[in-house]
Length: 185
Image 1 (tube, rainbow, N blue to C red):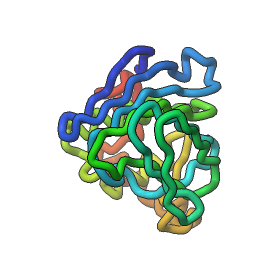
Image 2 (cartoon, rainbow, N blue to C red; image 1 turned 120 degrees about the vertical axis):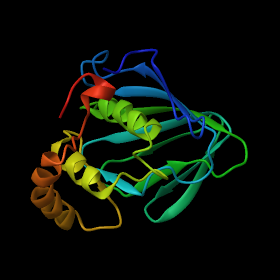
Image 3 (cartoon, one colour; image 1 turned 30 degrees about the vertical axis):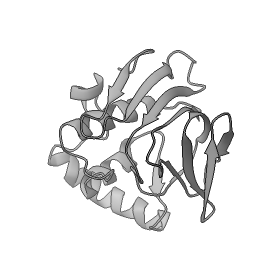
């Protein structure tokens, strides 16, 4: 279960996420995370959040973000909001780390997703920021805060997740694993 003050560290890159506020702390209004990206380049695919906006305020370094097909940069003291239903991404392209505060509104279950993701990364189940295909289908189907890949039509992703998720669950895949979060979805 995500907790205020909990720090998640990617043992391969040294990237870290610290929960400043969880969904439980804010009655579901938001999740606030302090992020330190030491790694360089995209850590996840370009994606679309259906229900959530993400706001980033850079503490140090320079953050690269992709929005509406264009690459942008923000630096220390600057802030940007990436709105729901728009393809986006955020990452570090500099040789120096970037540190920022990320706010995701509303929270829904994204803090559990993040905690789960770090567990999977550290167990070697996520490579180069990419969930295995069946894992992605189960996550899309059963997570309450759905995100879609920007590179594939949403209808196709919904259809594939509906078709493949029961099979994947039969093989042991879960959207959220009790091992990492204390709950299972």
